[in-house]
Amino acid sequence: MSNEDKFNYLVGLSTVDAEKAMGELIEWSDKGFGHANFLIGVIYESGKNSISRDYEKAALYYEKAVVESRSVQAMLRLASLHYLKRIGGSSDEMASRLYSELYESNKNSSSSMMLGAMYFEGRFVEKNIEVAKLYLDEAVEAGLVFALTLRGHIERDQGHRFAAWSYFVRAVIRSFLTPSTSRLSQFP
Figure 1 (cartoon, rainbow, N blue to C red):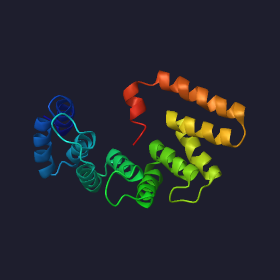
Figure 2: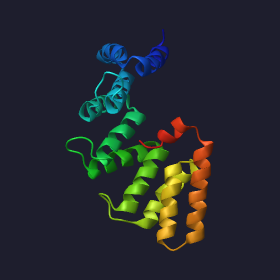
Figure 3: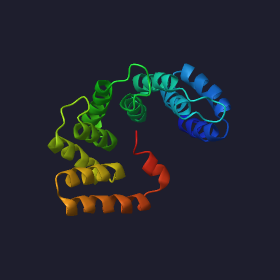
């Protein structure tokens, strides 16, 4: 069985029997298969079946996945844990650094969206609506519903009701056209 086939098997198994999947994933992690660390992190972050939710352990495994396999998804999830203040030592600075690194390395649309949100809110960075719009516009082009919504808020705050309405309507339409699992994956 190839590594990809094994990983896909473990993804499926984790939804049915997280405990069994966790045992096999830890074995794979110990053998140096870095992507297993990402899935272990997801299981701890979501608290599947008999595995209790543990954000600290999730962060640990996401960090391992980033170091061992340069996992973009693990880096997004780790940044999200910092952004949402779900782990000890969380900081907007760390979230900003991780999102910035992802954006600079591959123009990741989710990191663009989150950097836009940080500039919109003034979290760790000085609030700058024009910079927020630049980041969010890239995420809007990628079809991210949350980015459309934030752009609508910016336009509304600037008194541009029609433009705001246009973004909000596009967000609603996009959310109905996007499968629910895909919509959820927009939030790192």
